[in-house]
Image (cartoon, rainbow, N blue to C red; front, side, top):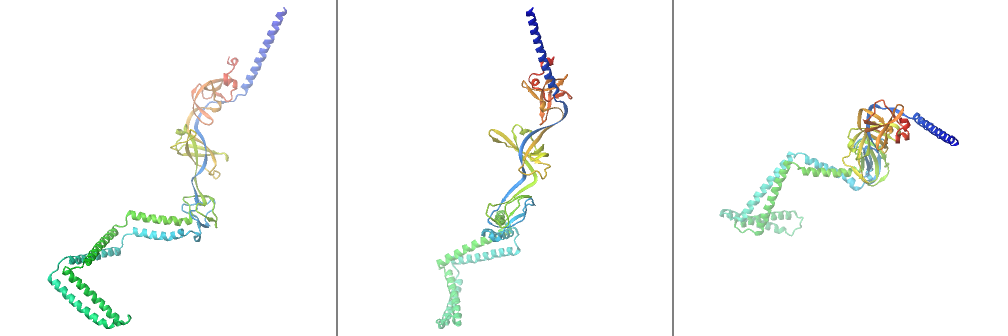
Length: 468
């Protein structure tokens, strides 16, 4: 009897323990169920995006240094000022410039004049002068050809007799001139009569010598030296005729393309040296930094200005090779900045790199995003977070990303059925930062998805007593 009582007591204690444990577990489950957060499955638009970070930069940037030494005479701009292309920003005092820069101004004028002369058609006067030069050269060649022929050709008796007579007459004139000069030979050199008679003597001596040479030529007894000189004179005259003809042809044809190119190069070289006196804006933009002041002594390479084209603000971001083929020019972008909290900006993909860069076996591609609606608070150098919209779906069945769990390697969401979280296996398609598209799974629009299923449910599903 005592044993029976002990058994009954033990059974009662065990039954009571089981009852209490089940009540405790039920309380736990009821508490867990009361804390569940749910949201209805719905259809809507899904924008799939790729996120990245980058730095804002201006469309174009130039750091402008001085190219020569000197003293800064004047700074014509201020920080924040808009400037146009080729606008002079500052210049050096002319008296402080190196000699080569000062003289380049003269070289520039001469080079421009030479270029203008090449480009202009020849004047009538130049053409006439070129023709006259050809005519004179032709006449000289003809005369020398006759002279050389006479030196090498026997003459007729009448020509010889005439030449002898000329020699006789010239000899008579020479004798008379000598006789007239003899009384005055020892007179002072400034004696006018002596000077006049001496000039007359020299003249008739030349006439006599010419008459003798002509006679010798006609007799075939030409001096070899005279013949060599005559032939050399003829060759020179022929070369001068060729030069005159080539000059005329070049004048009519005008300057060649090579001549004009060489003249333009001389102008450009002189202009580049002259331009070292000042600094000009290479493009339209905003002055963002000034390093030179009036009176500063500068040398080549001394920084003067920074110029930025702020008409377009760009963000360069690195995108993994896994995602790069999903990005195309023209895709919409949402841009945000840590420096500008609570505000988002719109952008568009303006360029996608064709070649990737590898760093530690990771290949990334540069994607350039242009900001569409920047304001004064967005500045070059700021760090930007970008989300590139790579896909846009309409009427997609959507669930929050935070509701998705992985159970035994499968994606699962818990939906409320009969008041209990029930696991449903799903397959996902495109996703955004907050939602994903459901492409497979027993889900319907309006089903309540549990956002925070208890750990027990995630690992094993609801307890067996709940499942029953």
